[in-house]
Amino acid sequence: MDSISRNGSSGERAPARILVVDDEPPIREILKFQLENAGFVVTCAGDGQEGLERTSTDLPDLVLLDLMIPQMDGYEVCRRIKSAYGTRHIPVIILTARGDLDEKLKGLENGANDYITKPFSMPELLMRVRNVLQWSQSQREANPLTGLPGNVSIERELTQRIELAKPFAFIYTDIDNFKAFNDYYGYAKGDEAIRRTAEILTTAVAGSGNPDDFVGHVGGDDFVIMTTPDRADAVARRVIALFDEATHRFFEQEDLERGYLRIRKRSGEVMKVKSLGITLAIVTNEEAPIRHIGRVADIASELKRYGKGMVGSVVIRERRKES
Image 1 (cartoon, one colour):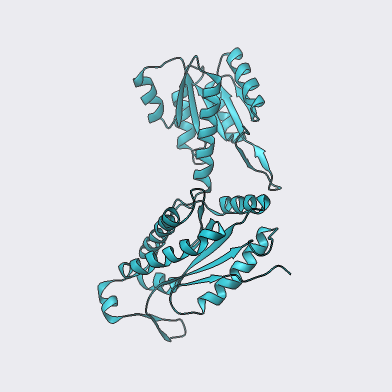
Image 2 (tube, one colour):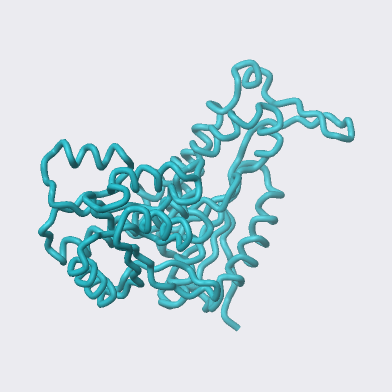
C-alpha cells in the first residue's frame, strides 16, 4: 500500500513527513526504519523541547509522540502543538507504555488524534498513521462552510478519472440569482442556502448515483458532481427536484406572498427576483475523449453560460462528437 502523500510544488504527490519524538534510541530507530520502508519521510527528536521546536520549524504532516520524555512531557508538547496557530492542524498520535483509561483521556483532552500503547504492533501503527493522515488531508482540503471536498480534491479526482480513461460525467452546478438573494438577505441566509444545496447534491447522488461518485464544493454557490454518464441525467433531475422543492424555504413569508424579491442595483434600477434556480452543466467523455481538466472546465463554463440564460432550473448536456 502506498503511503499517504501531499502535493508538491510540481503537482506531484510528495511523501508525507512524520516526526518521531521519543527518548529511547532503539524505539526511534525501529520507527524510523519501518516508516521509511512504508514510504514516509521521517525525522526524530529525543526530548519534548526538541520535538516542539522541530514541529514549529519543519511542520511535519504528523507527529508520533511519546508521553514520558525529558525536558517537557508529551502532554505539554501536544497541548502546545494544538494551541499554536501555525501547528494546530498537525495531527498527533501518542505512543506510551501507559495503557489505563485516565492516561488515554488525558492525552485526548490535550488534543491528541489517536493513542497507541507500547508494545505496539507495527502493522496496526502503520494503519493508524495512514488513517490519521487521510483524515487530516481531507480536513485541510474540505470547504469550511459545507465540509465537502474543495478545489485540491476536485482537481485530483477529475485528473484520476481522466487518466483512467473510463466513461465519466462531470456536472458543474451553479445557483441562479444567488448574488441577488445574498445581497437581499445577507451572508447568514446565503450561507444557509449554500449548506442546504450541498445537502441536496449529496442526497441526490446517494439516491440516484453510484457508490464511488464524488461531490465537491468549488466555492460560493458553485459545486461539482462526478458520476458515470449513465447516471448523470438521473442525478441531475433529482438535484433539480429537491432544489426546487426546497427553494421556498429560503425566502421569508412576506417575499413568498409578494412573489419576488425587490433588489435595487447600484445604478438605481429595481430588479425583481422571483425565485432561485439551479443550472447543471453536464460534460462527459462518452462521445469524445478528454485528456485534460482544463478542457472539462472550458466546456462546463460554456454550457453554464448557455443554461444561465434560461428561466428556472435547467440541465444542459454537452452534445460534442468526436471528429
